[in-house]
Length: 218
Image 1 (spheres, rainbow, N blue to C red):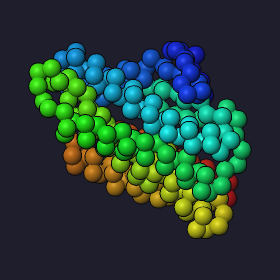
Image 2: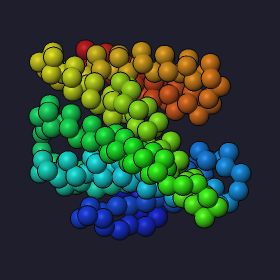
Image 3: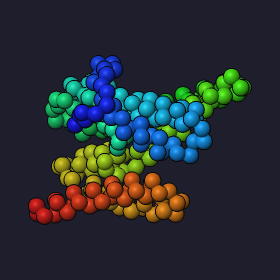
Image 4: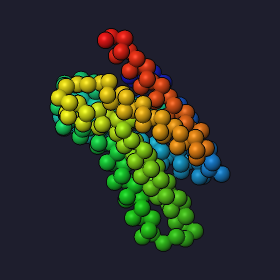
């Protein structure tokens, strides 16, 4: 999975590779920021927040004997396993939930600090950082919990479906993902969110393609 572009470092024993286009994506998402300082803060907070999210997956994965590596790329963040073993339903559930859970914790810390640090000229940028932490980690974590593959919420939904049905059913989770995708796409359309429409449309299309492949095999 590792790209040849960008730079690599180790954090808490995990290899982390960062593609430079990750920062381009962050800049595009933060396009409404009016000045360079706000844009730099936004990009830095996105970097820290996505990395924290992936570290959540990585730490839990390591507890289960996996060997995680983290990739920050144009599509966001990805934790993958350099070596792995089959996971139980509970282990899969825990690994998927860990990322959004860390995001909610970081966002909550940003909210508490922002409320308790007096606003002044000297703390203005700190307040901006904390508000961006709150926005990115709370909102993105909640969206990431939607029951739509390949989001973490989609993986959690798939584990629950397979646990209830007693076998590794892939078709029903894909159907639920497609239904969720259509609803969210229409919601993004009503709010005029072009980015939401594009991202949701892409996920829904990919899930539809995978569902068609399962039907062809049958």
